[in-house]
Length: 326
Image 1 (cartoon, one colour):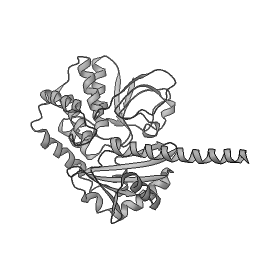
Image 2 (cartoon, helix red, strand yellow):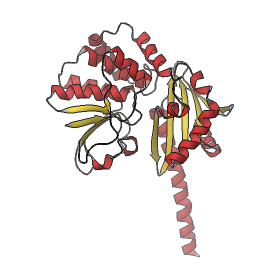
Image 3 (cartoon, rainbow, N blue to C red):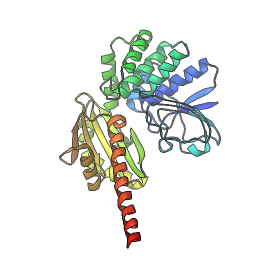
């Protein structure tokens, strides 16, 4: 049996794409089961409850040589704990490719707004009937990851697929449904500050620089901003615990499309200002319109660190060359 897994700190797109792909593979007589690598968030709970799905089982690792299918991610640092002991047989993702395999595997990476969009395309391409329940959670995954088409990751294909899926799902008002989802996501009053920061937290390796970036997408930014002092302390703790170079946490106001970013230290603050031109407001960095970690934040970090490494290599090579000429 193949295990379908999304990234750590699962979000709605990760969970819904895994469940839907399990259904697609079942139609093709392929034994597969969806799992999560952690607790699901309140938005995902709302979606699964609304459409009467059970949450997939949580796993931390699998027996050696187990076959796994990765959805919504393809980086080892974001995947299952014993990743290197397992046999990756397929990847379905809408993020940049950052993985090496020792054999040919099936890879479907496409620049769409969500992994659920890719799964929906697979149903259509294989002429497999989409049930009302599956259509509903595919729509939920697309809405979640595109912030109901507000994110710059949104494509016309995402909108087209949502329209086609809703002919099956028959969700009466997608705008109202999206607000119900986002309101559920914004309800973090029962979570600790560290749980909030790690709820949608990913680690990235930018040319050898390991950076943690957490995001809280909300319709009520107050839930994040009112914990400012606690968040700043937690970011320093996570930086130490995870043994990484920097940690950032952004509160994203979905409706106003505003970004409020916290940082793990003064150097990190200056770094973020240098990259994004942020304005500091009461120890928080502010940017209007900076809402997508995948499309806007991560690519600019990549460029920044590549430029730094290029300059450092030039200086090092120049010094070596200079010594040889003495």
